[in-house]
Every structure is written in structure tokens, then in C-alpha cells.
Amino acid sequence: MEVIVIILSLVVLAGIINAFKPLPKCDICDTKIGKKAQIHVWEIDGIDNKLCSKCNRKLESKQHKEKFDAFFHQEDDSNEPVMNNRHISTQTKNAVWRRDQGMCVECGSNKNLEFDHIIPVSKGGSNTTRNIQLLCEGCNRRKSAKIQ
Image (cartoon, rainbow, N blue to C red; front, top):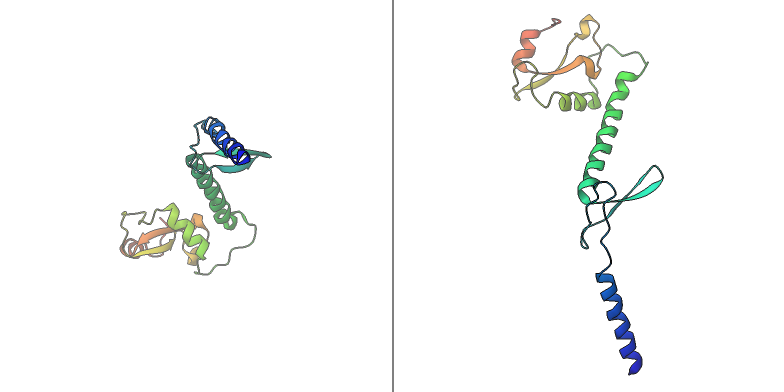
């Protein structure tokens, strides 16, 4: 019976000590990370850093943006010759859509959008993100094969 009392006393004592243990702080914003909050660990420059959820979301967003930019700028930075056909790759379309925010660059419409070559393929234009823009059907028909 005495052993059980001693064990229970030790468990209670450990709980009390744990209750007064200081809360960990976020290594970026220095705010305390609550007991029930998830602690995120990021390795930055070879050191493990504890982050709060807010700072973790910011880093994930920044990392995602860097990966997105690296992925979509591969096409423009390559030294490979660009084929002069009208096919626009999916990655170029995604990058142009994001850059132009899903709106016609001329009138701002978001209906009947088309991918347009700024310099037409018939005049030597390429299929890179620099030469593609979003235009609505009406603005694209007015532009035709002209260079504006």
C-alpha cells in the first residue's frame, strides 16, 4: 500500500512540475506556443527551429511560392530553341493565368478568356510566359494577328 501511495505522489509531483514548466517560444516571432498548439520544427541553416502555426504557414507559403516560381521560370530560362507552333504547355498556361489573375489584360473581363500570343506565332512569337497573355474573346478578335 505504501508503494502505491509513493508512486501516486510521484505522478502528482511530476504533473505539478510539468504545469510550471515554461511554454516554448516561436524562434521567429518569439510568441509563446500554447500547450495544446502544435509546434512545427523547421531546419534552417542546419539548426532546428520551433515555430508557431502562424510563422509555419508563412514559411510554407514562401517555400511554395519559391517552388512555383522556379517551376514556371524553367521554360523562359532555357537555351533550347522554342518551337514555333501554337501549342501552349499546361505549365505556361498556369503561370500566365496566375500572373494575369484570371482576367483579360485589356478590359478586365473574366468571361470567355483565351490565351493570346503577344507576338503572333505567324510573326515569330514564342510560347513562353513572356509572350502569352489572357484576353477575352472580344479583345482577342480585335487584336487578331497584330502586334500591339
